[in-house]
Length: 337
Image (cartoon, rainbow, N blue to C red; front, side):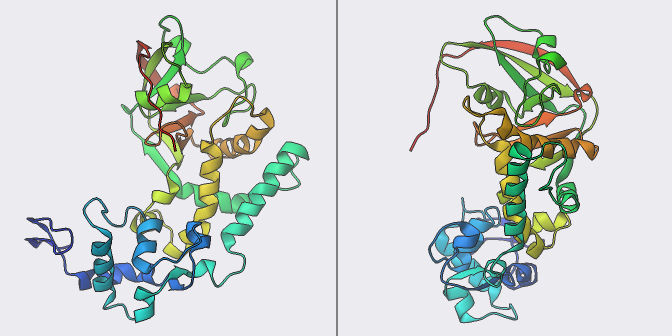
């Protein structure tokens, strides 16, 4: 780790810790090794157009470079300087379109098998066999993968839950529903209530889909014991060094990443009034499996607030409602395209 303080030649920051580009080559070699020249990156980026190496790195690993300070040309120059000492460096690798090797050398990448397996499983549990599955998931793969996304929230961490109401509700009224009133949801089966909470007041308000001039009660829930969670939020934002800390080899994560994103999308998909209960069965199974592995909750991104996330908590004994507030919505803001 460098301790030299100076001015950055790329982002023009002054008085910051700096390091020579050549010193970063070894850290970037596992990333450079992932790529080969190819005319399109449609398989990895889902965009049918050519991408140069620095462009692909920026899109596929969104936290790798600080793009709020580095312009596109700065990233290109930085990648070129880091790659000068790469032992397999060629002019074509840095100046012609590339794609991830895993999506070029295999007609059917490993993740495609897993995604197809999920599709067969989802169809089977909804329309063929409910309890003795003919199209089962590979639970060994699921377990070894999900365990690397385990995290623990410490006591004192706060979450929020809201219900639309004409008068202020008490803490007891903002808890999970009783067994006899537990309707099926994205995570919980019918008759088995879970406590759904959000990371912030804003997220929980969005999740209720409250309308203008309606009133709502918001409860603040505080952890009284550590909460063991499997986190399936923002899979695509995990950086290459972060996933190595999670015990993934970079190549391994690249191959299984689309499958994980599919699971994340299934959990985060907005629940619509026209959705039938059968549509919940695959994710209910996934959450039941996570619960069977001894975890207290599953975490997933909010479909209603891009910056927020939700938790479906199986064991709500680890939380205590610390208070409520009563709000009335006086303004809504929509974003559209």
